[in-house]
Amino acid sequence: MTELRPETRAVHLPRPVMNGSRPISVPLYQTSGFVFDDPEVFADGMGRPDGAFVYGRLSNPTVRSLEEAVAGLEGGVGAVATASGMGAINSVLLGLLQPGDHLIAQEALYGGTAAMINELARRFGVAVSHVPEDDPEALRAAVRPETKLVYLETIANPVCQVADLPAMCAVARELGVTSVVDNTFASPILCRPIEHGADIVVHSTTKYLSGHTDVLGGIAVFADDAMYRKVWHFAVELGATPDPFAAWLTLRGMQTLPLRMERHCANARLLATRLAEHPAVAAVHWPGLPSHPSYTVAGKLLPDFGGVFSFDLKGGRPAGEHFMSSVRLALLAPSLGGVETLILHPATTSHRSLSPAELARHGINEGTVRVAVGIEHPEDLWSDFAQALS
Image (tube, rainbow, N blue to C red):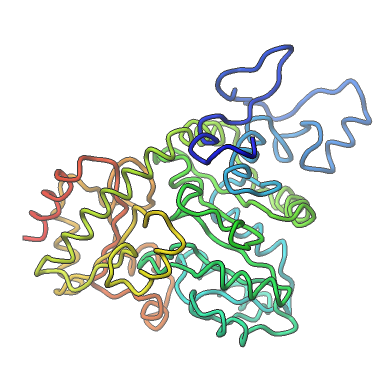
């Protein structure tokens, strides 16, 4: 189905082939293992990700359908599903880095990723450098002989800087460095980083791919078959494998991904635009606004600008706390990508492990509120925000 667009691929998921027929929906294979008549087939399935289904930690038909579906959406040769987004990120980082290696990461990162990179430096001697997400010459200058990975986010958490993927991935490829892109905020509907030169794409499938705040999961998609198999071997030994039921729920949610993303983006546009004009708001961080520093890069890379944004209140942390305790429709909760609108305070939640200097580097202050916009009616959301701000 290489000629199909993502909106069609999301509906027509890979399904197991039966005896002369196929199920309409992907079945749930809730089993820990599989029985064999042929010991050679059994042994072969233990050693590769595309062999016979053997044991749940190694392979499962429902999980493999998810892997094939997301690999198809992202244009990869294979994918490794995991039990969480951090499971996917750590499978890639730990599977490809060794003590003494050098990692280059963009300055603004999800808090869990930033904490893990700091841990790699502290415990395993991995050298870490940071560069702006849209400066290929800074990346070129930072590369060393021992540089192994460049880590980027399509849309960064939480102030939504957009990486110049074509330029950054081109430099990484030219210099023989593997590029990894977290595409969670964009989803494959807004961006497919492999098309722009990325080697590996990671997602928290908890977010937009599953879309209903009822499942935890992650996935890593690979442009290269050898790298895919290398990380698969590490991930199954690490034990990051997802449960089949979580994979089934994710597949079920993915079929409405294109429709949901359209509404998420439209709602975010309305809220961000109106908040930017509100007297209580100092700044709004959404790349669809001309005032955002990534506006030009985002306009070239993305067809729309995502359903997450953040804004800074003029009253600092007291104003942020007042707003978050005053909303009635939006929910004060972690995560994003579900059908309901969620808000949080990044400095004390998603990025709580960062120092004040690191928070400042990420563009986060005490008055920053992150909004993960749902699919409610936009005027209902604005009425809720307006009364909370007043």
